[in-house]
Image (tube, rainbow, N blue to C red; front, top):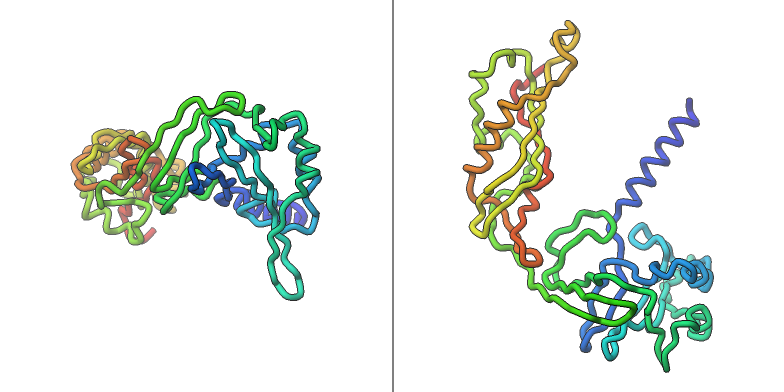
Length: 293
């Protein structure tokens, strides 16, 4: 049993760590540095392990960078070029961190089939390169899922740039963000449900609401969303077998959806040409019915 518990704790720690936001590669475009929200070097699956073999075992490994390296790129004459790969090594005694580059000769050897003149051209890569810089406006702490003030989507076809779209993102409307709510009891004031008209809620303790597919406009209005409501019952009600502890309640869900749409304003961001409310979409919050079980 002890071993099972330990394995469960280790798995939980691993899952939590793997959900950490990851550092992206760096790309230089017209003299300006951007962060790549991804790892284009991984698209060359055959040579990727050989590249990792060039890195020393004692390099720094962090939860935000599990591979322990940073690739540096540039676009030269519309070609996506791999310029260098860097890593850091921290002295255990002095705690001094040294940043080093992978030996250029070794890198050229691994990617010898992709050398064009003086450059390693990433002809192995075809896709949409997502890059960003500036202030982070939203972050999910999951891989590269975040948005910056400035973003670009660059179309790459076999290492050649074929298109580019540039966006300036911003907070469009200051308003309610459910992820910032510390005291959920305040939501009863913002969204006053008429629970008296629903029979059978005398033993209900709280309601869990889940919001999905939220759509907002430029003025902070919630124009559409899908709401699911689960009524959670008190312990004494569960013990009698009257219900299984919770049940879905479409009627309460529909009423809450109306209240959410009537509320104004919601926090709204303009992200890559689309108005988004991170504080409403894919959110779950409790609605207290009784203070005590």
